[in-house]
Amino acid sequence: AYALPSVDARAWQACAEQEALSAVRNALLFRQLERILRTLSAAGIPVVLLKGADLARSLYPAPGSRKMGDLDLLVPQAQFDRALRLAEDLGYHEYLPEAAPGLDHLLSNHAHLRGDSPSAPLLELHRTLVAPDAFRHAAPMDWFWANLEPDQYWNHRLGTQTVFRLNPTANLLYLSAHLMLQHGGERASL
Image (cartoon, rainbow, N blue to C red; front, side, top):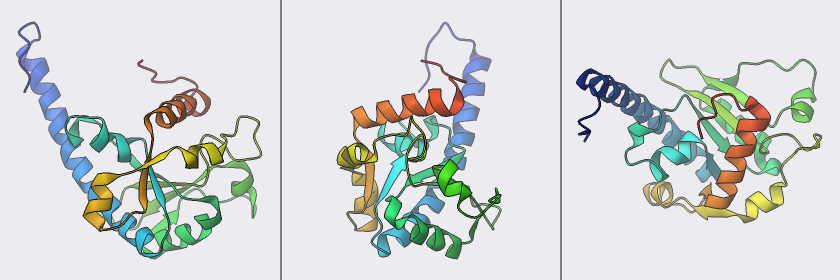
């Protein structure tokens, strides 16, 4: 697939090896994602795929082309606690303990979960995007929920209509805000 004569053959080999490793890791992540999506779908909880969970299949030519480190999912704020309990039933638990009851809901827009099994990925279950409602730069969630499109791949695979992705405009806004507000522009390669 790689055939540019101006690039050193060792560099292409290194890239191909990294892509192969990424493809294997992503396959494991997608297996866990399917398990999570099946559980949330069976409970009637809509899920929006974020970042790599969406982009690796929708934007890149092959799922291994987009390196993923965790799974990011958005659920409606009103169903967040139920979705969290279902994730816990699947063996996920919060690995960043809450300092005081209710503090995470006030200061964080998602729960950080780790699976019990070695193959389980980190899972970030979002109730809002970018920041919780208490912050001035909190995203207008009604607008984002109105700017979704069904994820054809997962809905077909699961036989459901509960899996979504942000439409291109909403995705670009979210990814830009996430990069700048949560990561301070670190690793910005655009």
